[in-house]
Length: 153
Image 1: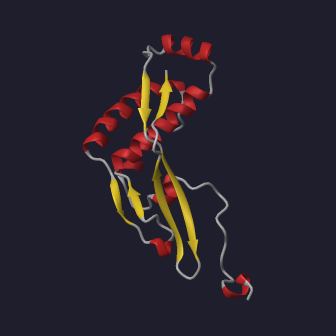
Image 2 (image 1 turned 30 degrees about the vertical axis):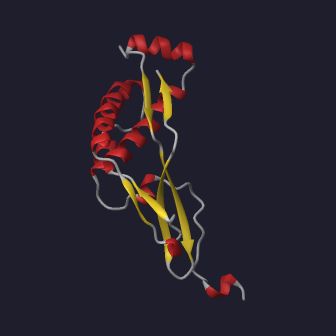
Image 3 (image 1 turned 90 degrees about the vertical axis):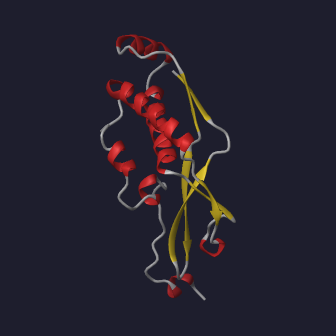
């Protein structure tokens, strides 16, 4: 039997899975991330400040694993991050995006100009994936990287 005939309205997802797919309800994550606009060297200090604030909060409020609904594409022990962990991961990604757009020499000059101290950041990156379960729908899951991502500023 042809899948197209069984599920004629099915459309595969062709865009990367992001936090917007995973976290659909109103959340402080969106409120805080919305404060920054486009990440740039001009708001790097603010990104760093929020990163450290929420890193401490995430350590006090970690996510955890729950028994997953395997039939819907979840892992047997599915990880559910806290909002604070999501914020740390997303802020870390934004900081990496900003710093990665400059050479080491350019970053050294910009850090002096913007009075940003050299420092080492580490966090567990949260990634997202989806599973299409025919007849049930599309489900999104979060995955916590086992190794910390380390950024040198």
